[in-house]
Image 1: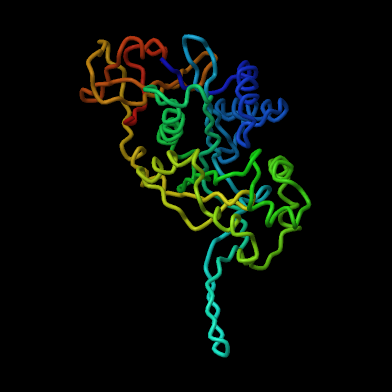
Image 2: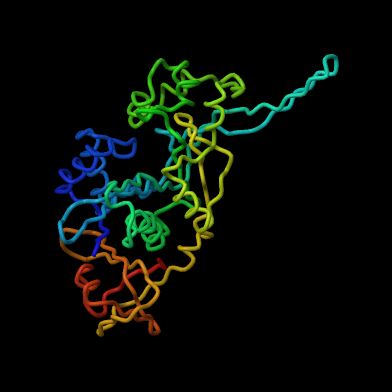
Length: 340
């Protein structure tokens, strides 16, 4: 069985191993960055960061047989503040016509925007390549657990939720849009700019033009990826659309990846959330599978979740013995449940 849980400081080695394999934007092979992500998450889960909208929650997926960390995902309670605005390009269309030469053009236009009171963001979904396929569906578990946690703590999050999807990237993880636009205004390559923006977004506001940028000036290849979803995230796109997300005609200014948003109250998984107490009996029959979340009142962990069959009876839920063991629950403990 796979266990979803809050990240612990002792998970650094596991995350470093995973980051070494992938070295992705979401999980860079940089010990200082990883330590910072873990520390902020631990303080967020424990409530040591008092302002709820400054919290960031990092989840890990652990194989209970090997104790390997095989994936991560995260929630940023609010993406876009006065200290670190959420920056994006609004994508629109401009039409121009000249009667004297009878020429008509439609241009894709990028308008930079800054959001200082942003939405909750789900992101950072990374799965170890050997585990990406198979019946356990680790990517889906890591994706769904974020909605389960939001449903269990609605007041800690904004009314809208954002997902930024990766576009097609070039060889070595290059961004064609950044090469065509951002690099010309900052002199930085994509990886440098992304690393810097994690701590400092001032350079974007000062160096990017405030005026509209016509994408017609870019190469055809760079134009094509604007708002496009890369092959590695098309499954995520389909999942988001199924549960209520829509493309909002905005893109990431670094790579051109599309922004998908939804009202938290309209996300189907959150609407189907149920709270119940653990029943005494074991339930081993085949049934619709659920994602069950539990928050221990004491001990090292702050959150645990498993995928398993479940049966509801009034305000009680009955789970398999192995699921209760992984969750470390006892009869009467309160859990949150969403369909899987």
